[in-house]
Length: 423
Ligand SMILES: *Cc1c(COP(=O)(O)O)cnc(C)c1O
Image (cartoon, rainbow, N blue to C red; front, side):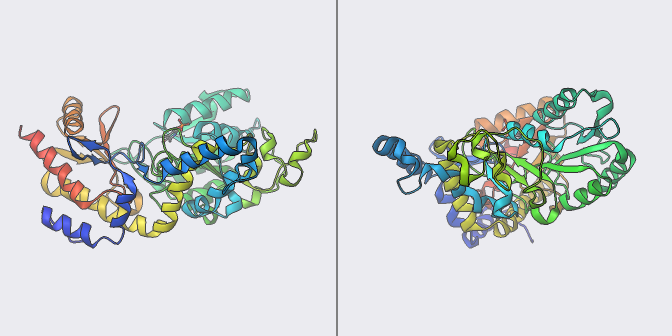
């Protein structure tokens, strides 16, 4: 795209944007009487306006129908997780039977590892990226110990081999090849939270499977802003949270993907009544019989009040469509990057890969003059209503989100950075 550093040009792009109407479906946090420049949808997505009524409606059913709300009302609670299933499958490129909304990310990661991390004395290692998100590292390390193995020998952390901390496909291939015989599980992110690098899920899955390893992905930072063809990529499982790009609200109900090939497999699992075969669940028998597909991993009846926002948000995703969202996201993210390179290269450097196919909506940015200056800029931006987030040791993350960010927001960011640099 032929970008220009010009507010009138940016506004013209926003006017011509086929997705521009979606911004009005969200509550944009105010700053001193104006909309803030919200670039933090990678951390907490904004609230769809439709959410309040959706929750109020369930509260009304609770008040009016009480226990009968499980069977009556517009959306009986008994099947509530099913109301988000199809749209969730669409967002991650899966069959509806391969996904389920349940629990939170950390819980789901453990549940998936109960089934898919089955170490043996010969094959016991887990491969993750160095500098993984803490919960992911804690989870895999504690699972290794739980099975009586030692993280010193069973946890392999793939070091970055590119200048800004990203990892080349060649390095992934080398590591999987080198450790192949002892690899039980390859567990990588869709988009790495600190660098913003996205990974080729299909290629990683092929490499892992070729060595006899199980392959799972943490999609916390990729769901809702990258095209994920999970079914075709062939991953064994994936997990994600729903409060980031999916706009499901603070602590939202998370998601799980289990590939169809495991739909009826006799895998060890931690079972609960909601994972039991739907046809006989309420016969309340003593023997667990898993319902086929991802729903068979459910433990509990779904939390209606926290699924309601996700349902509304996924309706928006369905309407907008992932391919249109990703197309816009690439333009917007490309614009933010271009503004930095064209106008702020003396102040900032971008850590995230420049290749649009190797990133999502997030740019990880460093201030060239160091960490203290980075903290100062971050604080300045926040004080001026430019909302991003800070990740230790020295990264400012900015995520232009296709559903509600504008080209004009990117210009606003650049103007504030320049004002800070010349203050
Ligand atoms: C956001 C995020 C989490 C958060 O886990 P919760 O269980 O939702 O608190 C975990 N891992 C990664 C990679 C994340 O980006």
